Every structure is written in structure tokens, then in C-alpha cells.
Image (cartoon, rainbow, N blue to C red; front, top):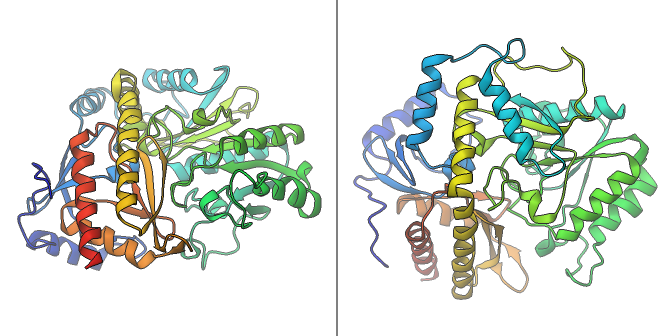
Length: 444
């Protein structure tokens, strides 16, 4: 294996201080959190995360695609410090302040379309989805919603009603929001209709138009269709370009709003500011969060002015659009435009190209997919049958941690690679050298 200056594992994992913190956590923190391996973070610098025992990890998670400019980027830190010294909070739903209106103006300029938009600020992706649900119902005066199998939109009640990723996320919380119908996502590697892309005539779309809208769900009652332009938690699944084009046309004919959940895929992760730009797709509402503020809690929905016309008091948020988070977001966007967006595109091509080389060497990698730095591999028992191997996926993720690499799974049997947009070739090479070594070791 090639030698790299990172990672550096100095103790048995977890180290003694990490073990003490984990014991305290087990005693006092909700058991509903999912921790796959015992990583206890202390300090972050760029692509490196240092734990409480001084172990240095190469981070290809970026806080679940949140730390878009890397850990503690000095310009982000400075922007946060400057704003915190001036104004920490004033609640943008009741008062005005420059940094919130400046960010709204900037997001309007960035959003695909005619740039006649309005922005509502939230604290998270789930809150953004909740706001989009309310806005869609308010505007259309309709109640039904359509979402996708494999989708993850959040864990609050409305967002959870749209989520179709894992049964554990929904079990025990019924009744959820009524009027939500889930349909198959255009997941070509695992087509739910047994078809092959290129000769399928997009049967997944035909199911929506020809079956659902003809037999069970009157389109005149549907307020919105919620879709991730690239499905995140469901497995980093990239749909065919023409699916989204046809979906937009269908929705337009029936007066249905299209909501693009760009919480994970937006803000430069795919090499474009928004993933929907890869598909020439202009949704009516866009949901944002995660990478928008380089780690500070902030979310938003962007909608055309004629859609976001609800009156004062119809929706609000005490902390949404917090001044410090807005300052971090403006600096994040500045850094994206100054080179990180371009880097995400070029490093994404490099990463996916290297993953495809790894696929040729290791038959357990059934599929490689993604856009930019939203890349995934699907782990299978047999490449011909495509039988999923979630157990092997878990082993790979776990072993990577003990070798100093932080990665996460997604979907039943996929691994996601979502590093900060500052990633360099040496980081990609190190990451995949570790994965190669693990897969070689597991063959023996």
C-alpha cells in the first residue's frame, strides 16, 4: 500500500479518553442515535478529523456532507467570529438584518430559472421539507403528496411521512401525515419492474402516469411531488436525465408543484451548485440545508415569487436565518464560486474514475455511480445476480475506521463518498488505497 502523510492512528481504537466519553454518552444521550463506529471527534482541520486521543482520520464523510469547505476553514471561522461579535440573534421572522436579506438575494441569483424567487429560512433539512409541504398545500389548496421509495426527507412528522428509506425510521410513529403515496424511484441498477435501461421506455414513469394517476390517485388532488434529484440516503442513486424532464412536464399539465430535495445534493456537492442543473430540471421549490453554511445549522426553501405568497404569520421560525449561520453561508458560497465548485467537479470525476478501476479489481463492487463528490458504490455478493451484501458493506465501513478512514453507508448495501469540496488527489488516492487494502484482505 502506498504511503501517505495521513491518517495517523496512535492508540487502540477507541482510545482511553474516547472510551470514557462513550460511556458517558451511553448513560445520558438518547439511544435513538446511530453510531456505526466509536469515533469521538475533538478537532477538525480541512480533510483531517482528530479524535480526543490524538488519532488523525481522513474524513470522507464531512459530517454527512455538511462540512462542505472542510473542517474549520479559516475564512469560515473568521466570518463566524466577525458576525458573532456584532449580532448573534435577533429573529429574522420579526426583525430585519442585512446578512439574512443578503443571503436570500444571493440564493435567488443562484437558483435555476428566472431568478424571481423568495427564500424562507429554517434550521435544518427536515424543517425545510416541512416548510415546503406547508407551502405546497397552501398554494395549491390540495392535500395529497407523492414521494419515492428509498427517499429520505427527514424525521419530523411531515418529513417522515415522505421518507421511504428504512422501516426503523417510521415504525412506532403512526399515524403519519395522511395522503402520501410512495412510488418507485428511477433506480436503473435495481429496476423494480425488472427492466433494463435503454429498452425500458421508463416504465417507472409510466407507472406514475398510467397506473397511479389513472387508478388510485387523482392528479387534481396532488399538491406536490417531492423528489431528490440524486437520491441520498437511498443509495446515492442517479436517475436518467429524461425522467426528471418528463416528470416536470407531467406535473405542469396537472398543476402539481415539483419540490426538489437538495438537502444533501445541493450547494456544490455534485460539481454544480444544485444537482437539478445536471438534468436541466427547474423545480418549483428547492429544499436546502447540510452544506449551505459549512457546519452551522441552516436550511432554506427557495420558491418562485408567485408560489411563495403566503401572508405574514402563516409560517415562521425563531432561529431560522440566524445571523451567524447566514454569515457562514455567504462565505461558503463565496468559496464555492472562487474555486471549490470547480474542484468538486474535477475531483468528482477523478474519484468516480478511480472507483471504476477498483470495481474492475473487486467483484463485490456491483455498481459505481454519482455526480461530483456525491459518489457511491454498491456492494454485492455476486455481480451477475446483483444480490446485495449489506454484511460485507458494514465490515468495510467498520474496518475503514480502524485504519483511519471515515466513510458511511447509504441504502441497504452501498457506501457513500462525500468528502469536503476541498479534497485533493492525494486524499482520494489514500482513501481508495485503504478501501483496496480492505477488500483484498477480506478476499483471503
